[in-house]
Length: 106
Length: 127
Picture: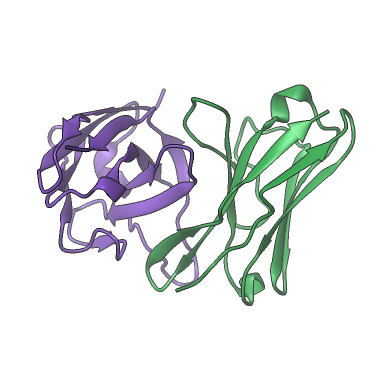
């Protein structure tokens, strides 16, 4: 089965840039979606199809995908960005999530 | 405003059954595929099942195949998940989620995403 690998946790200073990676075999050939989940809340879509932002998501959120790594970039990090972030792809008609990355804003 | 309201979560014994419901509003339910995603306590997200807009196509994770059945009633704007032969490892918050399109699977290289989620319902499997 297809696996997605994310760092368990990472931290970023307020106002700096966070880059959350999602590794998978030739993930660049797949469409990657990213979800943000704050404690006690449902997930929220922040990036779809590698690099597209849904309406209402700040321009500070961006995505890229190439080779074996997809990346979610959060520029000018704010306290409100502190959350768990999950990448997701489809493989053989199965939805696959990465293990999630807990982002702490210092 | 899109709203998804799950219900039916409960404490159930191993081997038991439960049916979850998800009442949808704020969009044309019959135009979109729907999915269930779960999250065990303190763990990550796990896709469980998806269904096309008509109900004619369904997909399941290997972990639930043969035990869970997804269905929908477009006249009632409601999504269901029938869960049988429940195990301790099925303990989780179950979210229903709206797909961005009608199919619930990849077509012509375009794969769906979930643009709206409910708040979830807790299923606990324990004796």
